[in-house]
Image (cartoon, rainbow, N blue to C red; front, side, top):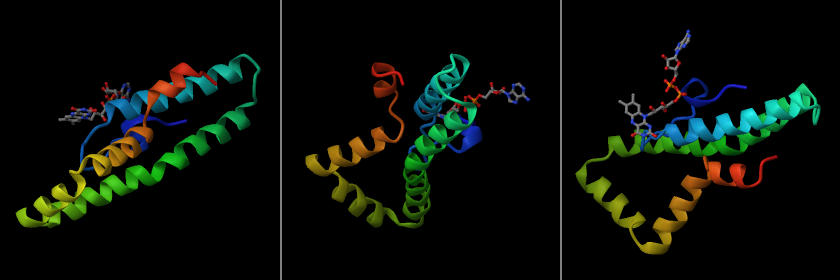
Amino acid sequence: MCVGDAAGHCFGLTAEGIRAAMTFAIRAGQLAGGVASGRWSTSDARTMYRRFATMRRPYFILLNWLQKWLSSLGDTGIRVYSEAARPGPVFWFLMAQYRWAADPVPLLRHPA
Ligand SMILES: Cc1cc2nc3c(=O)[nH]c(=O)nc-3n(C[C@H](O)[C@H](O)[C@H](O)COP(=O)(O)OP(=O)(O)OC[C@H]3O[C@@H](n4cnc5c(N)ncnc54)[C@H](O)[C@@H]3O)c2cc1C
């Protein structure tokens, strides 16, 4: 199991990587702990980690793509993009998606 920058878990566009490194490390630690306690096999732990990482992978790809795309826009394009994301419901929807991709809180509240 690979986590953090080494696994590409730093978001493009925001360059935020600490939260993701912590989230994936917590999940990897929980799964490794489950193997050590005999709760599941190594192979099952690998499969569960792969599922966890694969579900979140599109968000990292999207943020990398957004970084490339936005940096190719001029000031006007960036302003239009920012205005489109500014209204409360749009902003909070996008923030919820962004947070979900690397959210340590549910893992800590409900350790697997
Ligand atoms: C300039 C800059 C600003 C940033 N700002 C932010 C920010 O504001 N917020 C945010 O969320 N993220 C930020 N990031 C990204 C964030 O720092 C990383 O995504 C995060 O630290 C990744 O954590 P990590 O544990 O995967 O890797 P690292 O924090 O890089 O830890 C890896 C460790 O492994 C050690 N190491 C490497 N090779 C070996 C070896 N062979 N043997 C033993 N040890 C080894 C390294 O010395 C290092 O201490 C920033 C990054 C940079 C470069």
